[in-house]
Length: 95
Ligand SMILES: [Zn+2]
Image (cartoon, rainbow, N blue to C red):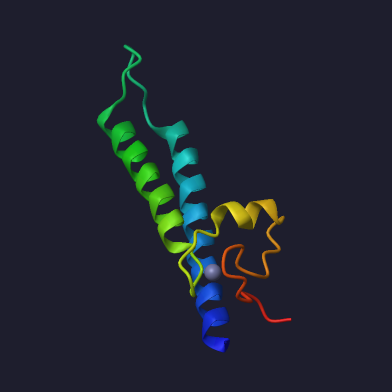
């Protein structure tokens, strides 16, 4: 039981780091020169790809340690106070 909560804690930490990286990239767009013809510069394409990769990684990482269900939707619908897995009901945090 303890191992699941420990895993959840680590996954949540990774999830938050990825989220921070995502906001960092969105912020970085402001400093990237934008081409006149409304296309995307190679740097912008790279940032979009990176952003996409991070979003994928966020969903891949933030899963229930027991049943592997994605916790991203449940996490936000529970106002970030997710205690149990919405699918298998395992306790994710200690009381
Ligand atoms: Zn579960």
